[in-house]
Length: 359
Image 1: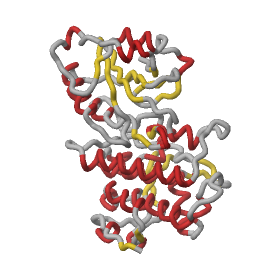
Image 2 (image 1 turned 180 degrees about the vertical axis):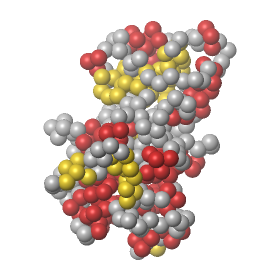
Image 3 (image 1 turned 90 degrees about the vertical axis):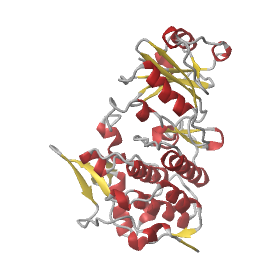
């Protein structure tokens, strides 16, 4: 399948009748589109408008107001069960989550229609070709970190049932007007619980985001998202990809290099050279919050509501509780989880990390 974006007024305003097999099934806050209408509006899913691809589908853009994403995954759910899940997700409203507008279910087609965000993805703005990227000063980067943290806190702690995203990364953070960050694909893991693995793209592309307990044991909890968010902070601060890259004469993942600089007392060397001016103390705090989020032991990581407080309030972090982060490594013939040092503390998350003291 394919997907696209469209802004045709005839598609947006034309009422669409329910699919024959779903007559009588109502959706509260979401429209049902026919596959024919979506195909026409997207110029038959023309390849020239493709802007991205993820683990759940392909995204195209034709300069319009909504985005159409055709899901590549096969669901084991029936149509009504699938629509029930979509209905649940469509009722989720938060300024830091991408809004789901409609869907199409015809035959094997599973297509979702989202709001379109004009500033593309964080991945494009932060890691794309410099000639095409948007300038991200520290004020904007800080705003993106805090907004994304709030969106995750909402998914993890305010929604019932809670949602684990499973694929927090720069390409799934979209930037709206005023560079307000919005988390995309937040409900897709819920829609495909039986058919999507925890690695949504080739491993080399997402290695740096994966929590150690997730890679080795498949333990999917809220803390796996927290880990990925910690890595995302490091990307936002450094302007570098989370995956293995060159640091001088060595190859390291971003988290590994960041911890080395922390131990050497040279954390500011991690900061993106494109950031000409920035508040040093605040940037250092953000990096340290990233370390709390990426602790090797999952139960030592904070909840996302605690992360929001750490980032947004004028507080002092208790670095004495900070232990080496864990990260995933790939050698020639095997895969393993490493830590930044040989020590590992197995204990519950210390309350002293989040019971912070105002300055």
